Amino acid sequence: MMPIGDDNSSRRIVPLVTYALIVLNVLFFLVEMNGGDAFIMQWAFVPSRFLANPVGEFATLFTSMFMHAGWLHLGGNMLYLWIFGDNVEDRFGHARFILFYLLCGLGATFAQLAFSLGSNIPNLGASGAIAGVLGAYILMFPKGSVRVLQGQRVIQVPALIVIGLWIALQLFSGIGSISAADTGGVAYMAHVGGFVSGFVLTYLLGGSTASRRLSG
View (spheres, helix red, strand yellow):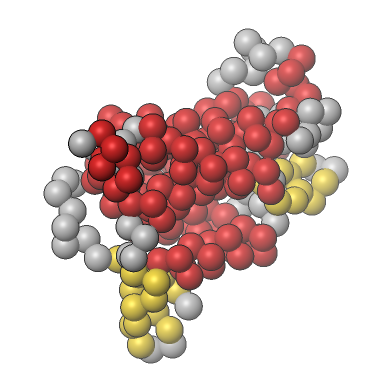
């Protein structure tokens, strides 16, 4: 099943931040491909290196969010950001959404760091931030549905099932950390950290239905 879109009839704003994030991720990946292993080692997040020099490695907390380990990793993440990010941005607004996205990415990185303190393997990818977006979507639109291409038919599928497909894609592609000496593996805690961050931040930033009722 291939997700192709959801219901945007209630969307109030043009999701400029979502579009900009997609463009930035694609451009950064092209630069990464051109730079090769040296670029990856310089700008990916390496836990042991960060702990040894947090000030010098501070930028990698953010640059690593825009790097990917292959076209499948990039394509899957950007497809899901395009489908779900616009709705979450519409609920948050532009400024709160970019703050939310970056904080989810940081939450994912630090969750992975906590379980791999001595690792020398570069961690990269937008998956943690995307996991946060999906967590927010579940809270904001629990009954949402997504158009899915199944064979030659387009059908409506509950968003929860489509989000489950994204999780399966992450496990299948084996993304999260790569190095010349290691084939890489899934940064499990980064996905968990991003997802949990998305849930918590959605409440704190007033994006969920429940939080709006409490503030009202």
